[in-house]
Amino acid sequence: MEIGIVGLPNVGKSTIFNALTSGNAAASNYPFTTIEPNVGVVGVPDARLGRLTEIAKPKKTIPASCRFVDIAGLVKGAASGEGLGNKFLANIREVDAILHMVRLFKDPDVIHTMGGVDFKRDIDVIETELMLADLESISKQYDKVSGKAKSGDKAAKEAMTVLDTSRAASRRASRLAPSASTRKSCRSSRC
Image (cartoon, rainbow, N blue to C red; front, side):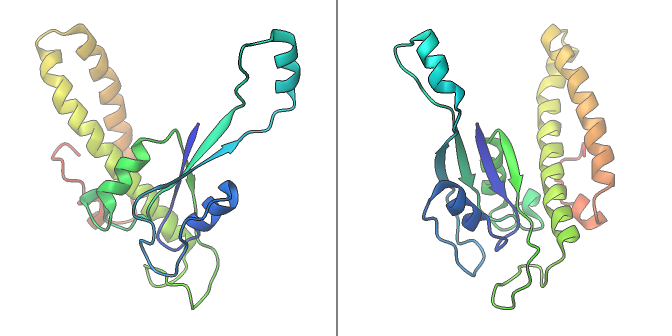
């Protein structure tokens, strides 16, 4: 299992990463301290493993582990390439789950890239950017597959059913986005 730690810059992603992994990722008071993702592996304790090993007597016992990935901070406009947007979104696509960090603490000595702490706005920014990236990805897949479906490719026709459903859901979600200007950042005409 690989879990990506995501959020705006300076919300504590690297601090949590270090706490979870006993790592030493840089955690500083300026945006984009993390550019390349930090990766740490943590063993998952399971008291049953010893007993199962005794019963099954495998050649090798491999305990479960979890990989944590400290991903660079996301900023508003990432879906259209702002900040480290494209790199951030590419790193997110590689993980199995997302741990979304949101800043709730006020500290004048820790910079907030959007001017001040507002957890609802910050959640909306991250969720909107992820939705816009998903919508663009779906639109690209749709363009690829639609030609094959028109030519009678059975697998492509089945994929189109899933893509049509995904597009409709993404469109509904994008209408819930906080602002029209954010929605316009989706570059695909099919958005």
